[in-house]
Image (cartoon, rainbow, N blue to C red; front, top):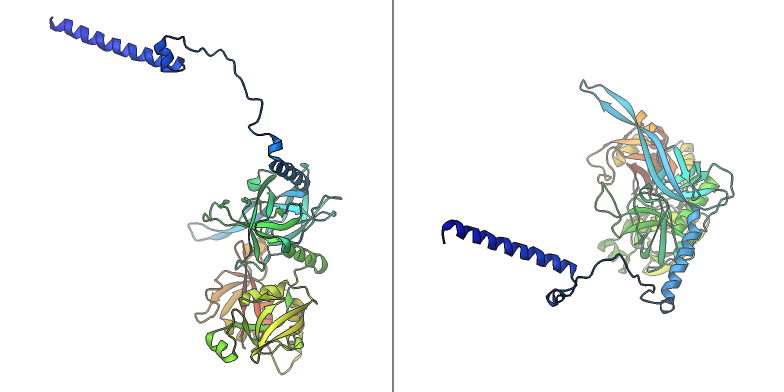
Length: 500
């Protein structure tokens, strides 16, 4: 066999093997099994017919509990969703711009925001977060039925992150009942309603994961839930299984600060705190803080040994404001506070929160350690704002005691400045920290650029008021509390034990 003929047979053999392989594959695709192909059975043709199951794997009678849960969840959502609104905000922020020649000017920039809210009165009052409406004068509400209304801000409390709005339209409206957040227990089922990412009404469910979560910029302890919360949910209600509001959705825990999203942990402001803020704003036009007039320090081993108290927790009183609710109740310097209204005291911050959240003029029971034994004292809560104003008036009347603002500022090592036009346009109030001395005990607590808005609950309008109120607080040797705005955060800084 010559070479040309051999090449022909080789190519022919390759072609036959390839053809047979393709034929076999196609047969397999059109046959049920290889066995059918080997048996020579014809392939099953697809004639377009199909058969669907007409019965579920399980009958509803076998799943009565889950069926009832589904039905009741749908009823709950249908009942509460009409009271939830979507909030769109708009405003103008002036940013300082510098050109290549070093010239600067303020350039306006449109800013927009989005959040949620819940109607809580038939007159159209809405609870939402302070950070949702902060610095944005134009507020538009989209109701459940699609209608759009404007709203005005009645008042807000940055420290609690609650704002109260009023719909600018005739009612009546469909509110939700504000429940008692103290009845919420870990493990209870909850539903979060809002408008995440501006997509419209959305409902998620989860459990109360923990209670009394503490954050440095919040005056209240928060509820932690597993209900999915995303940007845009802020200000919407957290409801229990009867549709009562037990929280106002507030914040997300996220490791991605630039693009925060739900990671299984979210937080809500307890409804009791939100209701108190709302009532204060409606009755007094501002948030009200409880006040007793004490300065504290944490217990150290030396103090424990000297006082004879070796128990857990507790804080020592190192100073009292003259004629304050604490002094009138009989509390003395060096007393150790063990509990407040049967709640064991863990830290200074813990006690201050409890005092500030107490109703003004209410009676509270305080357990103290004095002379190697426990004692119970009943005190009547005062109002921080009224007491601070009285201190100012009393101090100004004393000819023998002149308040020295410079000395007061020197004591804490702060220099402040007035607001610039850009800050005013962004609805800033108060003064701005310009410099912090190297020996200031506030280093690490405040930073340059912080906006101080109030001292001891009283609003600051200019540098003169800041100096006067600070000096009055220092001279009275009472707790000095600064409320600070830092970006979108509201921060509280407490200074105790200052002396002029």
